Length: 306
Image 1: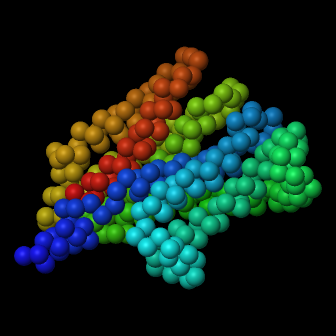
Image 2: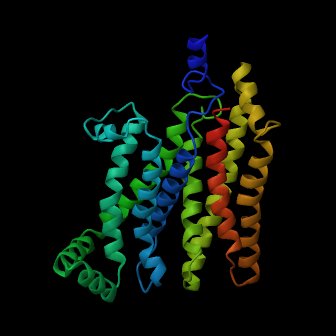
Image 3: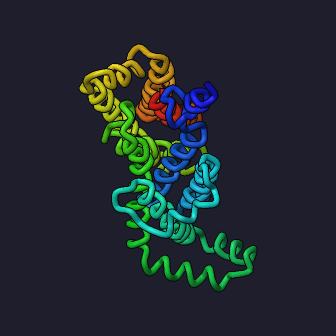
């Protein structure tokens, strides 16, 4: 009796128990937002940008560090984390992700140094007591600006897609979709744009981020439709469970209200009205986008383990 009790309370054996907790959706959300910040920062020109836009490249390593901190809390053997970097396995999404995460820090920081104004660069150099080192880094970044911007876009896209592949590679019915990679990338770009829109910026910069946000939301809605249609094609008990998650099950109301309606349709409509009528932008739309992006990952992670 004791043996049966121990086995049934092991979350790795009993599918009714959660294997992943809150740490994973937090990591996926912050990683996606970091990916969006990298892509948008590298896509924006650097002429006379406002302060917060110049600082946006530094958001990626900060967000990623917080997300990796949450991921570290989820690890069962925390002291073995270094083993990810002792080998590289082509067939392992986690191995790919570990090396992608490692490559993001230098390219994001180089882009950040490149975006700083001369006064900001001098202030940072004086605070760090390494003005000559920063000047050399700035010169290197200017000489290789095209390569650095391309690396930020490439690694940002890889990070955004990886956060979806991390789920789809497990084979669980709700997660067993190739759409999750592009869906999380589009959601990450939207979240990155929403993050930037929380801060004051010039009109042309606001137009740039709003345009990216609306395009990403449109793509995200299309991918969600394709994802749900894909779930409908799964046959047998797995298909019934997958469809029930979002079409009549316990996650139906949160998914359609928090993600589709509150996180996508409402902010898209608000941005459309602001753009068409030339209204002063508010913080409502970007906050809704961020809440919807987090809700998407939270619901998918928990629905996949139900």
